[in-house]
Amino acid sequence: MNHTNQEISRKLREHATKLANHGDNLYRVRAFRQAAMVVLALPQELSVLVETGGVRALERVPGVGKSLAATITEYLKSLNSTGFNAA
Image 1 (cartoon, helix red, strand yellow):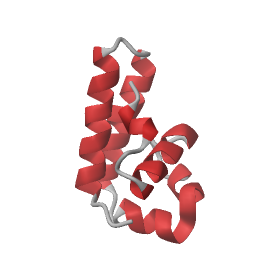
Image 2 (image 1 turned 30 degrees about the vertical axis):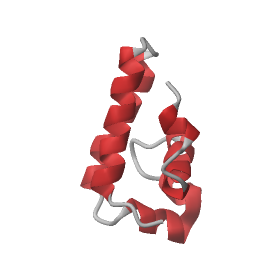
Image 3 (image 1 turned 180 degrees about the horizontal axis):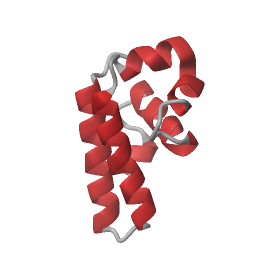
């Protein structure tokens, strides 16, 4: 797992746009956009946080809930994450 915060943030923004274009729930779209901003502001790489503390560590990051933490963790495991590819 060696993905940069910039890469993860970009992927979250892209997914938010995809959700918005498909008329998904506005709160879900906002959650992905908020998480993208939070990820960019983190002082350490998200991949390191997940490697050392797992999904639970990610869930403790303000602005990242349980569902987003699972989606981001899955993305870190595989660039073909269902969570990011489904709209």
